[in-house]
Length: 296
Length: 286
Image (cartoon, rainbow over all chains, first blue to last red; front, side, top):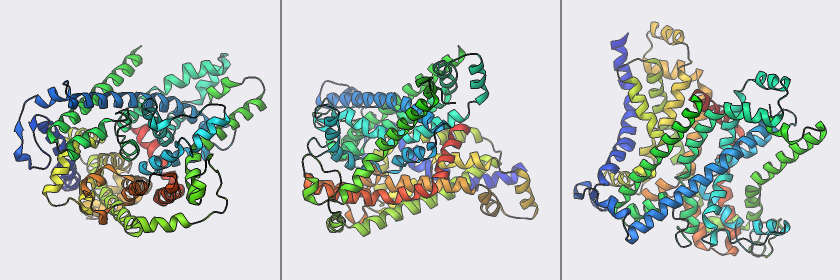
């Protein structure tokens, strides 16, 4: 069968492989190549001139280019860490609430939670910018009812980034809850029955059965959450423009500003390469960590 | 089953149930609140949206804000652009993903697993990494500032190929072989025999792709370079905020947001079964 189908395989693969090759893999290689060039985004690729690691020295250097990039890298790291640290535990708790069979309404709760994932991020940003409004916004009003004073939210450099993390968590947690439910469904009920017979209480069952068996699901969730988090763009572009005082200047926003708006294609590409390398390191470390735990 | 909730109260089952129900209600309310507030605010008068402390319910609900949205942005044109972008991109993704998914699931050829891994790796690539050269490339083939420039680079993606391969692999070989005996071509087999038996997965992929590309912002914003005629609704929406940042404008912004949110949300409500199944499917099988 092999020969005839080899031609068919070529035909079947051609559209997808060509499109992904031209519009994803080629630009990815170009990003790496451009990171070593002095190049203005307004000129053809042929206008690039080789500068070795000059762009990398500049983005890590002491000038304003370096300061801005390092701030954006740090902001992205904080943003990503906070997002993952909030989304993963919440997804497990919400997943348990949907998965339990003692109180009805789990499926409805899942629908409500997941529906936020369908909302365009630009609309999320618009709505939350009004929710966060210090005077007319309902959030400070609600905090007031709980006896907590008004918060500056997006207008203070100390709270702006975490405010954007919170709106991101609100939008995405439903998706990760569905992943957690998928993981919970895989755990055989007989394990809990056996544990109950052995006298294990709920807390022990969660710690010694649920969490260990969710490890693979949580690894998958963590990887997706990290990759989603570094893509945050709309709330920053729309509401804060990276401010106040650079506190929400994250990489996707910063790379686009440098590489497209300021047309410094070489510098922007070097930043994109650093983002890619950081992601590879993070995800590999995560896999290594989970695999080592598996070996224990 | 629910170990954490079991650990919360081990005393009386009724107290435990009340606690569970309260927790579920709180989570649902917190989750639904921003969208509920969006719709309520879109029905308020400018006077009401400016009030301190905020009014929760519009006193006399009015559609004024919706009428005004159409005056500030070209609403019909933007919705149409979004529909074109999302539908054409989705159609392209379906065709390319089914073809490639079929090849990866049902043919053996040299380099199959290597090629598959290479394609799947692109699934984890944040779009910003390729944005700068892609912007230049699309410009140099003359597609910038047009709908085609938004659509063409997105006509195939790794997630679609992955999903289709997973589901097509479970279609029995006997079914395909029987059709081959009858002399059917491979493309005919794919679209007439294989596609119907993975219809739920195709529906899921279609919905995912449609919602993703309806919502997509970074690439259209970059490639359109301010060509307002081609703006999808999400970009027009961002201009509502810059029109007037004050609270007097809140009703207008919320009305625009409600309109942009409706199509993906309505699709989801009716077809959520497919969404959820395919996420679960891709997570478990992955």
